[in-house]
Length: 168
Image (cartoon, rainbow, N blue to C red):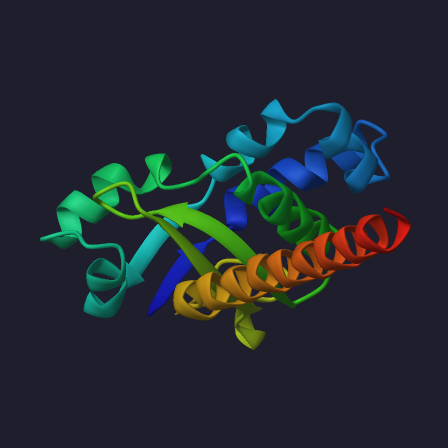
């Protein structure tokens, strides 16, 4: 799934903050988490493919656009902050993991690749984001970790029971 956005208003806002004396955007966003939402509001969507609509389970592009601000979970804020810091530092590519909600409220684990188009580098006027649904792999990994923990707990109980039996 791919979308294209215009980050030029975000870029101008970052420059205004630089002129106001802010140099460390990581520290700034950590101390001012509400600024992340403000910056998200400065991004204008140019377009996206139908796969993005399907990925999140919406019936139409307009429903997706209308609900887009509500897809973000609290856990995704850290990744968005890292993206903004990366762009503020002049980087032109970024990879991050996000937890976003589908139309039905299911949490999706998304890997996002963000790239600034070369001709739009200074202004950030064309930024492509490719999204990959990593939910199945993440859920399988979480089950594996739980299973390994359960096995370790069983081993500890067996050793404890064997020790108790040997002592009595």
